[in-house]
Image (cartoon, rainbow, N blue to C red; front, side, top):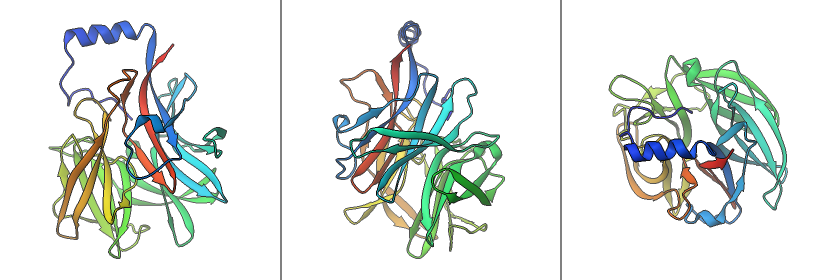
Length: 297
């Protein structure tokens, strides 16, 4: 993850001075929050329990998985010393406490956004590998900490936060792509294939299907809620990953795409220590999000 430095309007002088003053005593850190009271899209920050990382790193981009009755959170872990992300995994007990934490996937380049899916009884991960200029697919060899690269879905692409969806007998790949006339924040591209393991993905003719810094970039799994497909996305208009939008997919075909913004989940107005949130995932009764905090040094 990188800060959005040029796309949004610069803060005024007072804001910059105030932020500089705060930085003497606090620092910005992405953390995870989890809830076991899921009933659709998040409506209250009070439902979530904070899972804070050590002060020398951040945790972000959480994805949930359950196996043999146990609960796991896969996420991007980024040590401030290296500023290179890898994928780690928390085991969570029924009281939402951390039981264990381990690194599960590390490469010579930056990794984030560990999208997980199951296909033909095999577990796969589609982490963000933009720094390696391709979309890479990994298969789980031993859960949760052994993963093997099995293919490159799309080569020579500057893609972030790739998200798969199986719908109407096809697999759809949503990803933000940095190209001329767009950037990794405002341009959502769509591809389709007959299998998630395919290495031949057809670009949608309307690409980019969404071009809007307020709602283009993916923010987690596309889910079915109330007989609708809901696509969470990031609002990067205020700052990088400021808030989460929930968009209903109205039309999804090989020739058309249309979605409608339903609602947004913003940092709480009554807690100025929370600066942003940009990933949401749900699995059964569990929900997980991330949030950027001011944390005391």
